[in-house]
Amino acid sequence: MKLKISFIIAGGLSTLFLAQVMSSCSSAKHQPQTSASTSTAKEEGPWKGKKASVVLTYDDALNVHLDHAAPALDSLGLKGTFYLSGYSGNIDTRQEAWRAVVRKGHELGNHTLYHPCAGGTPGREFVRWDYDLRNYTLTRLVNEVRMTNTLLKAFDNKTQRTFAYPCSDTKLGDTAYIDPLRKDFTGARAVRSYMPTLNDVDLYYIPSYMINGQTAEEMIALVEQAIAGNKLLVFLFHGVGGEHGLNVSLEAHSKLLKYLKQKESDLWIAPMTEVATYIKDKKSS
Ligand SMILES: [Zn+2]
Image (cartoon, rainbow, N blue to C red; front, side, top):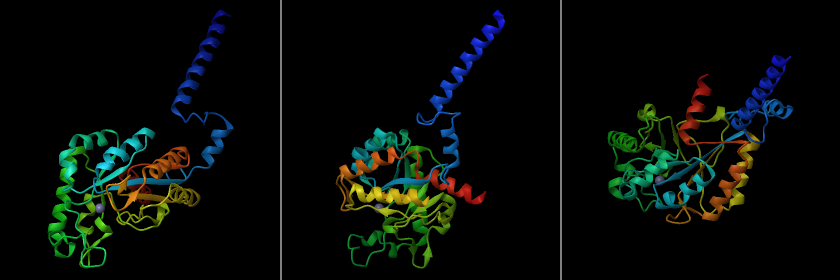
């Protein structure tokens, strides 16, 4: 009898322990072994079980990314992708800050060495002759992009990476310049206001919404649209609270991030390489 009682007590304790472990490993809202968890499983979406995926990307290695964007992401435990061009001054002067960004789990993406764009059209007056894509050879461009991977690897030691087309220019003459670089990258982000479904993603032309002056409500509406349609939504930011002509206010950026955090049960929010790898695996399975 004594034996039986101690068995029951031990069994009860182990059940309690197991319940505590399972509870701490799962979302606080979803207790295991309940009907609620069964219904959650039924609603599993295509994006790692979530309804939609959101990738937060930041271009051009700005100081505000180190001073505003990364801390805002870190305060909520969100991870972003920072597309760096090798020539950017703060990669030299703020090396430790970029290394800290890597340690927090953010991705450094390749945005070329000198940010070449095709000049000669209205709005492209900022393009310097030396770095005008029209004056590049394919060899020079490919070599500079690969050299940027080497530079970024010195920061994060990563071998998987994604690319972002400067100015969303994808061609050198008639050549899609990513073609000789496909094996160097898991994916490449362009600029195009479009949300693909998982099956619809072109990994070397991933669309993104360039944010410039939108309100938090406008950006949140995009997130809601992504959730409703099981889409991939990529945000592209430049300035965050200033430093760039293309800008989002600190308040709007912060409000968006808080909304994303609240919606985490519906959203898979991850750096681009992680999402691109997932898409690639799903498509090949
Ligand atoms: Zn750029």
